[in-house]
Image (cartoon, rainbow, N blue to C red; front, top):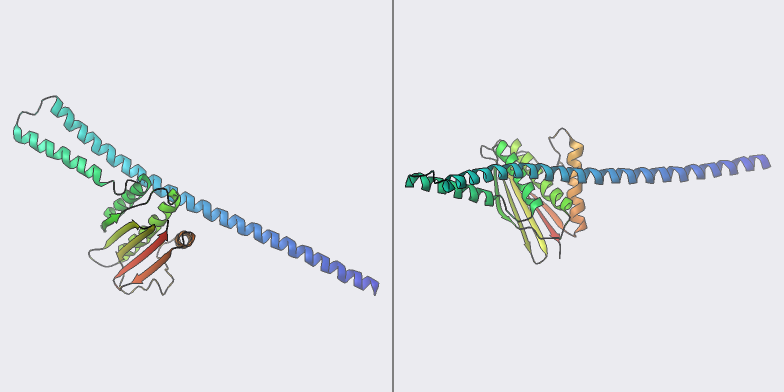
Length: 246
């Protein structure tokens, strides 16, 4: 009887030890997964920022070169004809205006990202309009800002590209008033698609990445006591995000 009792006691001790080990391993695994997701989020945001910055820099360099060429011509007094001079002056002004139009908010991170998404839309023949782009300073980290706007625009561009609409579009409105950042993105979509009912399923091959994007959006909204509202209007879709930034 005593041997039986000792055996049961030993088994209970072993079971308790195994349970503790299992809990420790599970917590460790969960922590590693969360850290990996955070690193992936940071890498994705940084990659989007660097791609936008690279494209932005190339465009600025080309325009700056055109302006310098025009200035050199004026300095060399090579232009004799008045109409030719006026034409070159106008071309120089157009280049300067195009250069200034790339600066939407004055925030280099946001502007670089916006330029990158503009280039994507142009390549896909999607009309991209920004009605307002006001970004508060020092209220969010660069990674959060890039992740938030980048994921919203990526989802909108994907839906607009998949739509059969002959004139697909994506619009962005970003305003900051009384400590509240309001972002509204609207896009065309397949009229028969029901993204809200299907829990925002994607047509992308990398569905895990898309799921991470939605997780990132939700985590940012939660961090800043915000709200995210999605409205399916048949052939268009709108996502509105508001964040309390103080």
